[in-house]
Length: 334
Image (cartoon, rainbow, N blue to C red; front, side, top):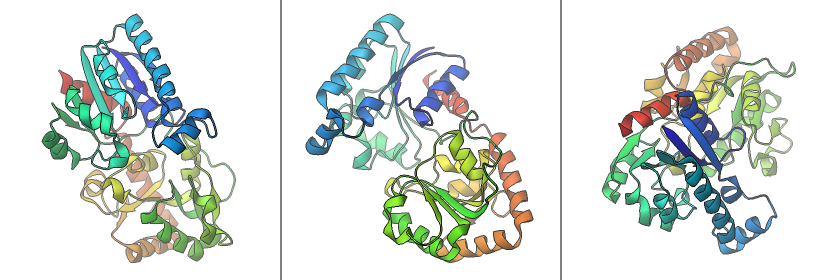
């Protein structure tokens, strides 16, 4: 297939990894980077406009669509693939000359934050909607989607792999991810308990005053191979879900073990299906059980390392790469 892939193309983005997955699966891929619309540079005119108008800058969207139109005319794609292109002009996307039009949503499409009125009005025009949430399948069907395909999240071997530690310091526990109300109190509490034995990286954590003075190592976001390096410095890597997306698994479900880290995550049916509790990961159902797991990891680091090793092999031999997801998606089109 000739795939015109429309999505964010910054280093470490899941869209870039999936685009590479299509290429690795044998398809010819041209990428149109949507980052200028989805994540405009701070204090730039499109960024200022979005803050006041609460929508993306129309001149920025127009410029991007002209680029899509030029690429489609030159490339003549068999497939236009939109990776969470909910802020673009849906009718122009669907009118782009291509044999098939597929939209991919990495987040809960019943959460208004992950859609737009324009996208919802045109959703039934897409030939296929791909979702990483089981619960979205019947919801999308009820909304009138022509066809729906569920695929799990994935990892990118080029970015998520075992790597040497950067520095001699090692942390008992760590978490890489954004500040969210459903995880803030727990992580602040753990930072107060474990102090210098805890690593916390992600957008927003440096602004959390309760973390100041705890002694925990707090930093900004890390992506790609920098994420794998952070995982390498931690004994117990927390995998916390986004309740607003009703997550039962997440990208970290695959990225942490693929990077060689010990998966310590919330107990869900999907997590239990992907990794065996106690032998390939440690699952918990609440703060008390999590603290028991952390105490075991501190007391028996050799056992923790064995569980991490088993989890690594389970994930990397289980067809959970982005190229595997690309093949699943193409399989749904044939």
